[in-house]
Structures are given as C-alpha cells and as structure tokens.
Image 1 (cartoon, one colour):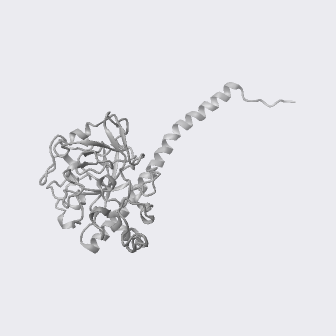
Image 2 (image 1 turned 135 degrees about the horizontal axis):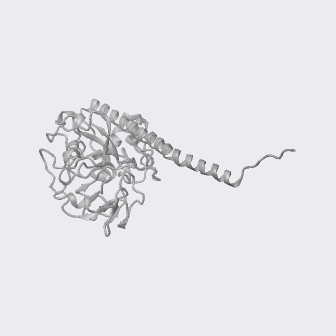
Image 3 (image 1 turned 120 degrees about the vertical axis):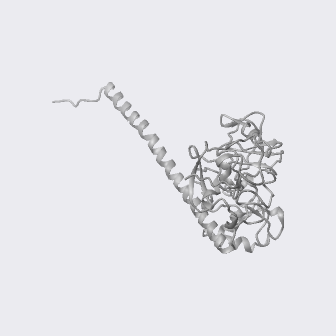
Length: 339
C-alpha cells in the first residue's frame, strides 16, 4: 500500500512565504483602490455642492454667505450650508428648521446648541475618509480666500464667502474657473479643549498668535514634521458643527498650502479667532479636493506655490501668496489656473 506523501516542513514554510509575498504585493493595491473609491466619493460630494451653489445662485443671483444672522441676531452665526439645504435634496430638513419647534422659534437656536435638526449632518457634507465620531460635524468648507484680518466677521473678503453678504458671479473678476469656492478639512478628534504640542497639524488649530495678517510665516513655523511644536496651545474644533458659520468650523483660507498648520490670533477657548489662517486638509495622500466657482472639481497639491508667506496680506491687487493665494482671490487680477 502506498502512503500519501505529506508536505515537508520546508515545503510548508515555502508555501507560507509565497502567500506572505503575494499579500505584501496585493495589499498596497487594495489600499490604493479603496482610497481611490473614497476620493471619488469625496469628489462627487463636492460636485453636488457645486450644483447646489449654482442652483442657489440661479434663484437668488448670488451665492449664500458663509455665516449669517437669523431672526434672533448675529450670535446665531448660521452657516451657509443651512441655506443650501433645499438645493441638495434636503428640502424637508430645511422646512423643519424654518418652522422651529415648541422650544425654539423659526430657524432654531444658536448654531452650536444641541437641537435635533442640527445634530446630524446631511450625508453630502461628510467625506468617506473622515472617520469622525461626531454626527454633527462637517468635512467641507467655504473659501474666504487670502484674507486674514477679521476674516471671521468681515462682510467683505477676497474670497467668495464672507459674513452676511452673498457674492454674485459678476464680482468674480478672475473668472469662475480660476477661483476656488470650496474644499475639505479633517474633523478634529478631541473636541473643545487645549493641548500642548505633539498634536498633528491636521488635528487642531494653534492659538495665541499676534500679527498673523502681517506675517503668515509664523503659523507655518508652528508645525514641524507634521506636528505642532511645543509649547503650542492647540484647540480641536475644526469642522465641529455643520451649522456654525465660524471659519474654524466651515471655512478655509488660501494662504498656507493644504495640509499645513492652522492658527488664530489670541487665545479664544473655543478656537474662534478674529484673524484666522485655516488651510484645507484631508486624509487623501498629497493634497485636497477643491471645488471651483464654475462647478468643476480638481485636486490641489500640498506643494502648490504659495509665494512669499512673510509678506502681509493685501486688500486689493495680486495675492502675495503665489498660485494658491491667486486661486482664493475673486478679483485680484491674477487669472491663474490649475488645469
């Protein structure tokens, strides 16, 4: 009788080694495919938001402001996403907000107050790479351009989205295909609070600065090797609520490049600065997705030209911050393009 020949130990080890090599070869491809799918979904979300912006503009002849008052007053600081709800198939949610309830009147409470319509962000506002535990957080943001001085409360900024006043396309002198409208940011993981250094520059905002408008370079110096440098005091409120129109929640600047540090003047406990540098950021390798004012979506590299970051911001004319600054200004006289 012939006995079946079994694997020898050496043969078994060879098979295991081959399987390990195959896994090592295939895993990066699988991860790349997953990231491509996530990036595609993120791009589609921005395209939907671009369509919503254009439909809003067709109706009101202007884009919505980034931050606006309601019937209660300035302190509500409701975000532009609330105005856009009917234009990305969330009309029922908008009607509920508009009606209010027994506790709060029409358009509800302040934007940071817990309220059922506030507490879950519409799906189009969440990027698949987010991984956030906060249901009311948002991954997309409006551009204020290369403005720093009072960019949280100014009714006029060099970008497309200011406080209270919407901007019409006729004011986009540089062309809609050359002007950035929206991008993305990572939702911070530790909520309200302060931490000293050793926090990734994508995970919070450094506070306690003075003179950011005259020297943005100091914000870049706050981060080294992808983390804030001790003893930077960092607040974790980026993207905190989709309903809150503060820049730290739903805005970004085009001064420091994507994935760079973000900073505010002063030491506000909530990370709400008057003068703010807030680059977009993402988990996509190498940069961020960006929505242009014409509705197209493109990818912006974190190595994009940013000109001279030691120069002060300007109110008129060409941006000192290279191609990135020019893309943020709506009528700076620089018709640059990423295409």
